[in-house]
Length: 369
Image (cartoon, rainbow, N blue to C red; front, side, top):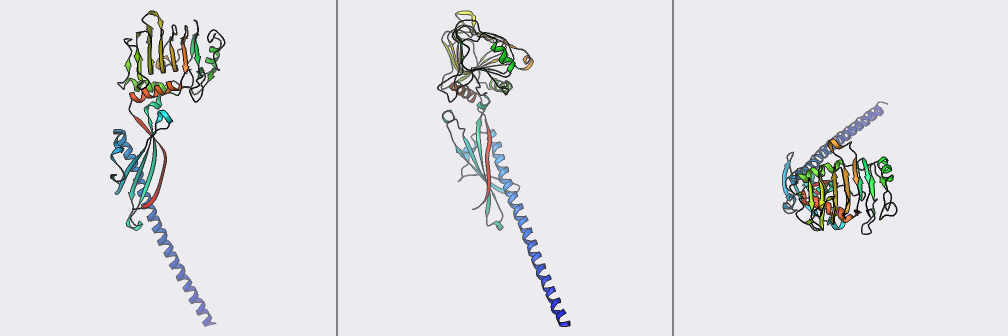
């Protein structure tokens, strides 16, 4: 009985020792895992931080990424860790494909020797989104994100057309922000070539908003690129170099005038043809792009003006509650045109050479040198 007890006690002591050894081993393993994870996390954060630092450099100099390649990276220190970063451009022809340029960031932060001279690499892809994205999408040939007072369509033939076979999709002839405005327009004799109502239906888009256009106009005015129209020439921009044009006062245009890009009619602006001072935005005037009427009280369409793109009419500041009177007399044509939308975006891009970068994807992994 005594010998049996000794054997049992010895077995218990051995098992306790084994358990103790196992517990200590597990504790050391958990501690090491925690240390490894902490070092990995620190390196990963350092690599991400370096990307943000690079973005700040790009905001100062858009050409900054072109200075650093895989064989000649940008080297910096973050939280005591060396980080090497280089970039790769993915260029796309937006005006052909509709795809923006992308830029890849490869940011590598070194890990300790216990990792076998490995490093954490963060790969981030950013989409390069230029300033011209502030140009509002063309939701219709005539866009009315505001209340309308009188809508007069006196005169001969006229057209507001959202159908364009050269574009991927057609648009409504008129888009309004509210059903109230639509109902008011439907009470007016909206005729096309003296015949039936406009081609297509007037569409209500509750998201239609003039406010973003305020920022667009302010940035364009401060760009130094916008040209004030005085009516002393017959061509304002071209299809390859569209411009930004302002009408701030009474302007008399020459006959057969054509323009490309963005045309902004300011609060007190008015356009006339030399041949007839009674005609506003009149004569043989063609503009290809976006025409913005900022607080304009009267949009006279007498004569033969043609706008290929879109017309946007809206109120700002103290005029927010004022309804706008619109007069579409004469032979005016407002035709939705996706090419006109591109001309407007090209003009904005030429005016403000500033980009915004939007992150699309980011991954991280451990790699060996």
